[in-house]
Length: 194
Image (cartoon, rainbow, N blue to C red; front, side, top):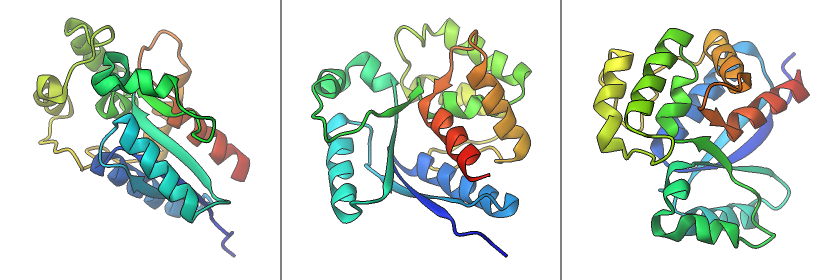
């Protein structure tokens, strides 16, 4: 007998995160994990867009669990004064769950350690952790790492027990600079329903 699934509404930047959440739902179904992520793209990580999307989703879903998952890169660079605005956010807006630095860095955490290390070296050579790279600066290199043609809006990896275990291990290892608050919350939610 299947258990009732707990819906988690996820405000996310765009098509890539939406595709990841859909792939995560497939994994939840296969493993009979009673969670279901409902992506609500804000069409960009700009603070104003994310805030407005959150308010619209909250208004339509006043009692639902809502997470806000965005990339840290634009906040670190303070693009369009995003960090300034985030630091002044009103109390009705929850803390964002950041991927350090971006979605591709988050995806790299699902890989085996050898591949993650290659991506880490690439990021370090670009000074990515101090001055986050824009996608045009690294997408080709990311494709080479994965050995596939990668397009934003697609999930170039399979979500499996192994890839999620890699994510968890890399998230917990303090020496690895890639981190993701969403991953932390994801593992907490999985633990509460199992």
